[in-house]
Length: 434
Ligand SMILES: O=C(O)C1=C[C@@H](OP(=O)(O)O)[C@@H](O)[C@H](O)C1
Ligand SMILES: C=C(OP(=O)(O)O)C(=O)O
Image (tube, rainbow, N blue to C red; front, side):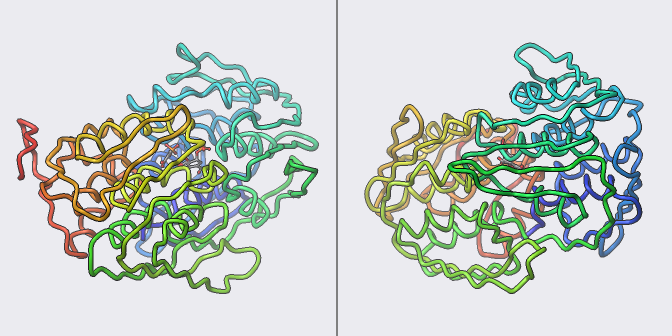
């Protein structure tokens, strides 16, 4: 699997804030991570892409420079929200721009706490990109309760805290991915995590020096989700995926698949306490049964719902997924697009106020034969490509280029696993088999 996207962004950002040279192997070379790399370069870090690894010569906490041009975040919400946090406590002005998908995503969720810290924003209507932020000369530490389960908002506040004197505190009620916390500790930040009733309190002491690290990034479980579901759905398949990140804040998909009776075995390697957990996942094809996927799993598998919906469309019986409001503000409205595309491919589904109910085909191939509008969303494009493997007629995805944001080599990998695809340019966008 390509390197984990969330961990790759953070490795570049924290490397840029350390004093000295950080060495990273396994960095994801996807478009989103390249946007972070370009931004860190524009802010003064020196990033060198070698044959085996990537080095980052950092400038130290507080040492970032004002960028000369607008920072182009491409399609990446993580780059945008984490960098807004990071820069909010630096005395500089920066403009953030992005593609059409990113420009409709809400930034108010980070603007609110970062204004409390002292940054000022001029955003487009509805708190969106393009926006210009002026960081604070005298940032004040805040105590912030996350109003939405979001690792991006949590990380934005913590990153702002790095160059802020005193204790920045984030409170979360639903555990979201903790890659920032783990990696900050690894770089030598003073960070503690404790539980207080239903809340987790994350405290960071600001204005400390970060020490450069040697990092090895595991494979991305969010990318592994696609071959995992493909192998479950295509009779006779058996695959093993090696070296995948198994951080428990990211493995909700494996729990959901177990609820559906999937044959998935995980062997975790002993990676030591300061490393991200990782290991191998072995998957065998087999009938899946419909299940109630509890809302509590959502923060641990938020990006995996589109592909899980494909699995549900071929299961025996009804699968109900709830707690999915956040899917509406990702690269696309993933809830609406999945319901529309699944229906067009012959699946039976019903949108609920906070999720979806899908009645599976009992293993029978779906009709397929539809043209899917992926709306600049890599995960929608990949989900319907996988659905094509389990459909009688080909599925046409209107634009596969966004896949490179998170999973370069996706098509080639699926071809080595036996899939056939035609990724030529079809001017008439015909839904006929190509
Ligand atoms: O922190 C991160 O790296 C991410 C957090 C999640 O977003 P939210 O924080 O908006 O839930 C996830 O959807 C995204 O792909 C990556
Ligand atoms: C939501 C995603 O990423 P981001 O928010 O970084 O654009 C994703 O990768 O599915």
